[in-house]
Image (cartoon, rainbow, N blue to C red; front, top):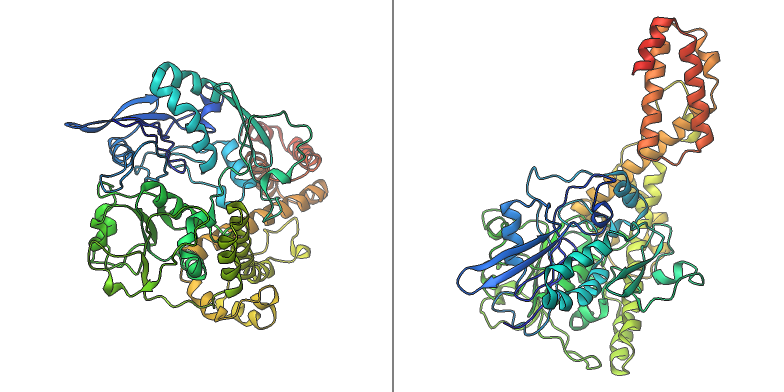
Length: 557
């Protein structure tokens, strides 16, 4: 059998040759063995293929990882390209699977801190793997896979032990990660980073140790390479992603499929893509029946596929992107056309975007001409990708700034927050009220893009991306209110207040303040430590002013 490796960094880190290393679920408790390892990977799986028996998990490392049968089945089938993909030799691609219901992985403090500080596009629910560091994991597999298939489990054990010594993936930090005699150097992006700037430029590199392998970005894909044949439709792609529309990506290989799907989900950064997406999807996937049923509308998901069988199966889906083979770098690729869905009937369908969708905004012809001219002049692909990413970033920012401005106005004024009352409520998001603000504070202030912005917002309000964005912003505002209220309490004269209160009221205050202090400590709220200590001292003084029996009860709880 030909040796080939496969990586699924978003949900699964894979490598294989008749086998593959995959990332799956691990239960960890801080301080226990493999705790530092699990900050990066859940585990590594080796999947083998037998002509008579089919795929099977041969090895899971560390050995104490627990997988459900459903998860094992999904890993096995997704680990190998299907027979229609035409993969020869080594290959790497990504896939995601759904976590088995009830098979939960508890979040610890480090993960909560990571999610608080990382950009939303790099935050991840704890499903199977947690960190979508695609480029880092692909580079890691390129080092590990050849050695593993020569030396087998001892090699895997040695690598996992090295990873178990890595520092935690803290947003904003430049890290040196030693593995197999090589030091991989990466920087974990942070919310505080200047958008549109190279991650390596965000920090001072003068004091860094020299490293043979520097990864410029842990997660950003080559957008230009992924979209080269569909550049003229980039406005449509951005809108489809913004609105969370159901999309099928039909590609000639799992790599093209997974890269394209991941590139699509990153189109709307820094806005988080809140719908489901499967970089590589096969007929053996456990959600196959759910996604192919014609009794209900297609779900909000992007599926990357290679099997021509899906052409017929997904004819009822509203948007299908069929990609051909990637042409050599430097060539001027033939731009695929937008076609009607009714033409998607036969197995030999030509590349194209099959949809009836009409964009709300006009194409940016200047951008397209600039990119196509760059191809003719053999401009570096890295430069082309920067142009694409900057354009999409500016488009998303122009769209989201009016929403951010309006949401900020829903926050209660700081002067209305007092120590002896619950924090005031956040005003509700009223869509019609927001739409009125577009006349004087809309996208036209920051974007030259013309079109029906109002219609795009109305459609966006119906999408999972709006729900996800607003839930996140609402939680952030609630947390901000908690912080402001806690700071006001810390500055208040509690001793003066309790003098005129009954014992019941004082005990109730003590219990509520304790709860706030515990929440501030557990969630590491950004409140000055001296203020928290002052409040704790106040509480202790208040408790000591109560009768002895009440003091005993309160000290026990």
